[in-house]
Length: 401
Image (cartoon, rainbow, N blue to C red; front, side, top):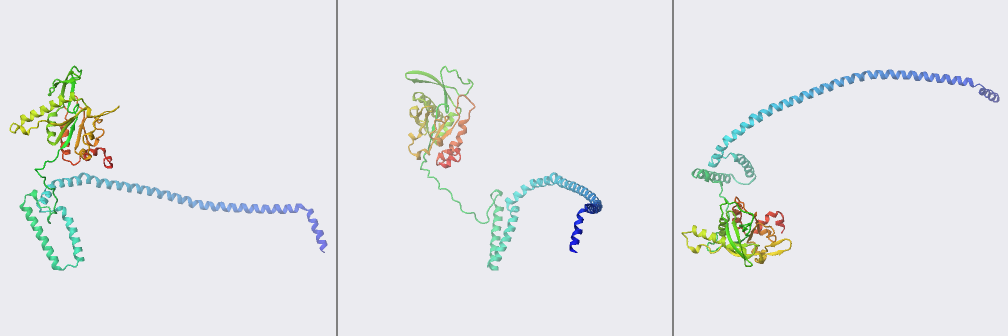
């Protein structure tokens, strides 16, 4: 039997058309099933799409309504701000400012008289609150509290009485007596204070000179007439027209009261001495005329105690003549009382902390630089060390030295 089954099964391979028909029919069935499934899916998608379109239309309508509401809210805010801003700026603030201007003088006078103290109301309230806290926390008895209150009331009454008796400008500022203040000891009038030394330049600081026949000339309408001085140099005489700087005599007269005056010029001795003598003689003569009721002994015989010339300068090649003050004031302690007034920065290059700069003068009759220097020079005559004051123009570098 088994052998017959094997033989029968061997004949099945000889019939391929049957298998092909079976397989093709199966494939047709599968394709029909797929088509049915796709149709069902499309119907489902269509059903879903219809509610989605309705929801999008609803959302768009709600967003438009929100934007309209926001714009309305912004307009309302702007309107409220403008309504509140305009009256505040145009009405409230001007009225309050005018009220302050009108009432301030009365408030100030009442405070000066001690009748009312508007500014300290809040402070008093705060002090009362704080004092109440302190009193409750302390271990003081009611009798002590009453004594303290009585003392403060007495002091307040005394203050009010004193303010009513005195003039309004001399009111008592303190309820409690003010603290003691330290005052400097009075100077000994018999002991004279040593005066500081002021060294002056000559050319283009106090005067300006022109040799005879020079092409430059001054304005003939100027109030100061030039002085013709004959100068002999190497047995050759030459004439110079010397012009004083405006207010030169007044300047020298004033600073001679505060300083010991000296002249330091880069010119030669033969040129400088006649000009210095002329300056001194004019000041002495004017002082004698103005002091008719005083004795001649009170008028100084000379204005400049010392004179320095070109030979006293230090010459440096390519730089010029430098006025080295350390030659004549060897100690550093002496330089604190020395000031040099010059129009050339090269002249005081070694002592910038002792120098006062002034613009050079030639022929400007409206010049006022000498007058402008008088307040500063008077202050420098009273200071301890002139270098501490004049060195401040260097800024922070002056503190690093």
